[in-house]
Length: 228
Image (tube, rainbow, N blue to C red; front, side, top):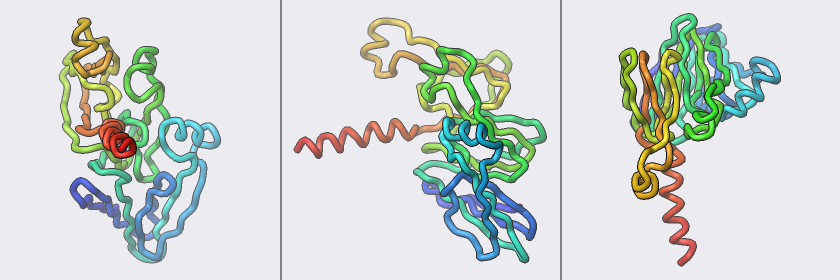
C-alpha cells in the first residue's frame, strides 16, 4: 500500500491499494474511493471489542475495504481541522492515543482500548480512564487536533502538559497527573487544578488545539450571540 497525506490543516490521506489488499476504518470515515472496492462491516474483536471501541471514542463496527480486480484508491478525510499522522508500527510495537484518534489502518494493526492504571490519572487526566491502544505490525493513520509537536524523552526526563494536549505517546512513557501548587496559581492561573506528566523514555506527541478547547472558545461567542 502506498499513501499520501494532503490538505494542510484540513487533511486527507489517500491510499493506493493493489488487488487483494485491504484497509480498515471506523464507520463513516471513508470520503471517496474508486469503484473496485468491496466493503464489509464487522464488529472486529467481537462484542466486547466493539463496546470497548465505543468507550474509546470509535464506532462499535469497523469497515473493511478490499481492492478488487485492479489497483484502486481510497480516501479518508480528517473529521476536524488538524493533522493526520501515518505511524509505521513494527511487530509488537504499541502506541497509546487520545480518544477518537484512529482513522484507518492496515488490517494487521490491532485496535484495543487502554485503561489508565492510576485512579487520579483517570479522573483528572483530561480524557477519562479510556484511551486507544494500537499494536503493530502495520501502518495506522491517526487524526489529531491542530498541529503536532513531537518530543523524544530520555530515561527519567519529564514533561508537564496542560490537560487535553496529549495526543499520543509510546507505551514506554509513564503517564500521570499532578496538582498545581499554590492557592493563587490554582484559582487565578487559568490552568485548572491539574497538569499531565509524561516521563521518559519514549516519544510523545502533543497537539496545539484540543477540540474541547476550541469548542469552549466558540461557545462563548454563541452564548453572547444568543443573549443579544
